[in-house]
Length: 402
Image (cartoon, rainbow, N blue to C red; front, side, top):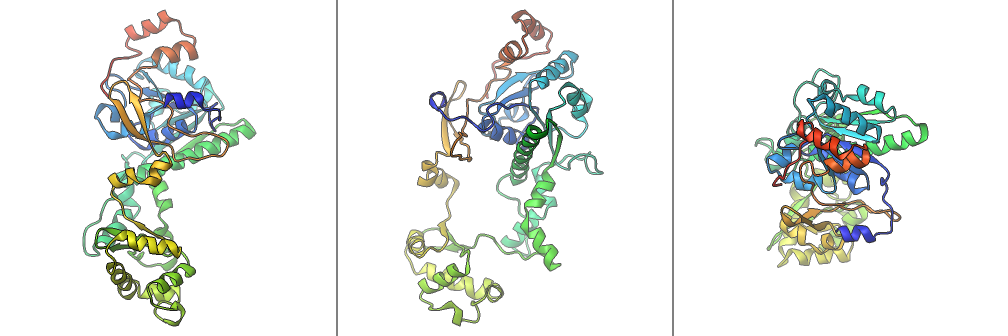
């Protein structure tokens, strides 16, 4: 991977941007992983003795979110550590943090403190409930976002209208907030480029997921309980499952015809979107299910629908998705040679540009691995000064089994 990076001739979008990362677990680290993939230099501030939470407890989030970053391990309860942070902020463009509201201020590294040091700094906070409201003091994770935005209720209703709520299979609340943060940071960098003015960004997991839930809009329009309709119709084949989801009137007509039903416009049950919706759960889905069952394999059905340009796809397990030719062709899984774990596979960047590169940019850092590099090359500390800071416990560095 390093060799690929060295031989690449294309620049990256954010190659001149430097980010200071105080975040932990998933939303913040995934945000800064995306910034790193886009070319930013990300310096991760970790606390002794164990480092970032996901590293310490062995969560896969550590591998997923932290390749390509640099690690500096600081005891932020010490005044000298705060001074180092301020010195770093002078040379940084963006700071990302995911503490509860007020924590950064108590440490002496809140927005007001950092803005005095660097008026152009952009600080992005990712929290459950956002800043400065009656709920800000409460802990908020993706679980809370899934529960409070209607997502778990909707999923439960789809599985069983009389059953309990169902949690999503992955932390979409964290991921959605992370991507909102990336967008906001890039927008703030663009604004600063035009005006020279930095700013504070307040990203809430709940706000982000609520804003992504199109069923909320449906509810407000209809002023009744949002319909528990799956956005992914699933049909059982003889050797697996597939989804068939016509995305236009023309696709509905082609599907109806390829199933041997003739002209859809003459069937009053399905000739309009409103009519189809009224019959969606019984006749429409049942007709498709019976047709699918007339074939020996899911792939036969998909192949027929591909020829007539009707949206369909086999439903893959995670292990099958990893090996799918499309995923392989797009280079979405990369192998890195980690000095601790050896060769491991990591998800690659999903960004694609015509003129610039976006990619996984390095290995997982050891705890405090870049203490010397950052303080000496970036802040002009002497070797003796760095050694003294280690002696005083301001800096920490140890071999850590990721």
